[in-house]
Structures are given as structure tokens and as C-alpha cells.
Image (cartoon, rainbow, N blue to C red; front, side):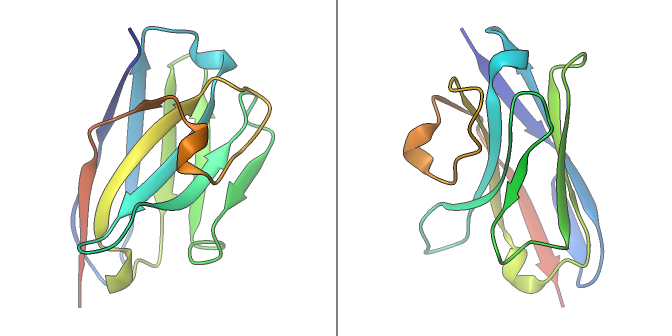
Length: 125
């Protein structure tokens, strides 16, 4: 059974930084493409970033490009997202997800096979 556990969320002021982690157990981590999504109150889950299984390819939503950086450590079976210059509109529950199709970096919720429970990020002004 594949399990994803996010951590690193919290409360931060506008302009601050946070790094989220997602540890994966079970399955074959190095063969999964990984993604980060978020859901703000009253909104649908939206794509944030994705990374291929090798880590060589990353893909970001326009809303976070240039501020967020996604990475992975296959030896530790963990993905990260470094979030800088945070804005109040970044407030959301952040989810990591695993895609068994290793080569793609998809922005579609439907592409992902496994999901974590989420971690809350709150950005205050």
C-alpha cells in the first residue's frame, strides 16, 4: 500500500517562506512522477507543481512560477516544495500526489493515483 505523508505546513506572514515535505512509503517511489496540489477554502483543488520520476523535469502553475521550487530525493523517498515570497492567496491545504506514469509531469488531478492527507498553509497579511 502506498502512503504519502505531508509535513511542514504552518502559519507564515506575507513574504515569508515555508518548505513542505512529502514522505512516501510503499510502492516504488523512484518510478512515480509526483505532484503538489492545493485547495483553498471554497475552491476546487488546483495544480501547483509536478516533477518527473528522475527529477529532471518540473512544471509549475503560472500562479507560483518563480516563487516555488519542487524537488525530490529518491534515496529518501521524499518530495519537497520550497515556497518563497508567500502571498495571502497561497493559503490552502496542500496535497502531494503520486502518478504511476513516471515520465509525465501532469497538472491534472485525474492523472494521480495516490494522495496524501494534506497540510495546512496559512499566509497572513
